[in-house]
Length: 206
Image 1 (cartoon, helix red, strand yellow):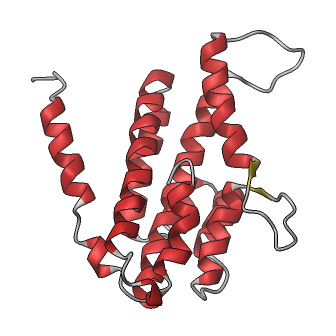
Image 2 (cartoon, rainbow, N blue to C red; image 1 turned 180 degrees about the vertical axis):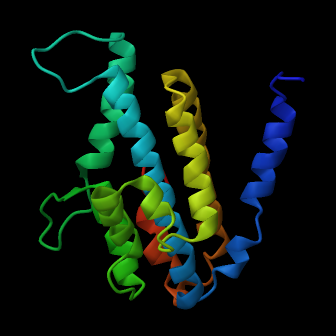
């Protein structure tokens, strides 16, 4: 089995992703609702990977014990800081506001006129009944379940370096994906897509 890394193949797949037909398909509020309904599970998946790494590299335990290297602790803690307590867009009165990934999950759904975001219900099921029950609940779209199973499969290996590689690959491609989506719709602002997706394009993980 050839396990060598083929960079040209990866670049080819990345270009295919950036030219995916979904960008043209998101052309009205209804299709935007569907897109965001899927994407929020990617956000939750990213945060789960990130918090696993933080648990391994910079665990919250007491009495305190030094762990891992300073650079690794800085790497994971800096991302967590941005995701869980980032500076958001200024309020209407110009005052600084704070934002978090949980806000990101709910806000686009509200703007898209969704009711209670299904992803928040999914997270509630995870908390009450566990991951497998939540996966089988029918709340997340099946493609999202399949993707999340891959991520949690990496977590199940117990190998932090494997999870870190997966996290970095996902974190690198999602902002590019959203910028491609916004570029496709820059002449169609009447759909509301550009305004609704702008926070996602500037978000650290998408």
